[in-house]
Image (cartoon, rainbow, N blue to C red; front, side, top):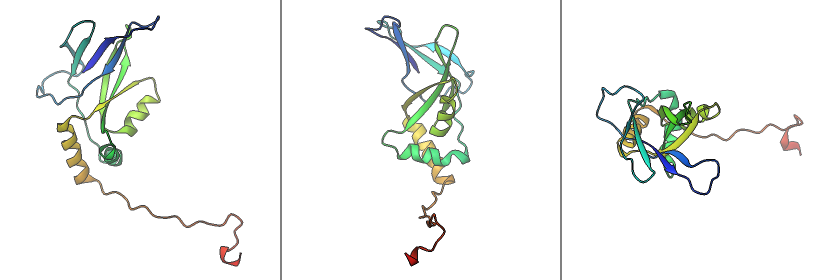
Length: 151
């Protein structure tokens, strides 16, 4: 759900856009990118963009794992601006690494809290597919190449 709200005190921009929620939709037949206005009132416009699939990848499990362990797990909405400067969501991901890769390009990134249904789903996926690697201490090599025991 994207929200356009008034922005006071800025001489160049009169509103701002934000992603406010990612929800699980039971309407599986909705085409990707379909927009529906759901809440127009007092300058605030809310739109639902339907039809996005969240696909989990085994090679992204470490990113999902760290997202779940963070104080506030996030769902990332990647959007690009259309010709009228309205952000249009293009992708929804639960991987910070994937979201960051898009952020380095021209895409816009919005972070929203993870819905409980998504949280349980990603948690089950991570538990089934990810084993954290045990951290090991590296052995240091002396920069001069001499044995440390002689010093």
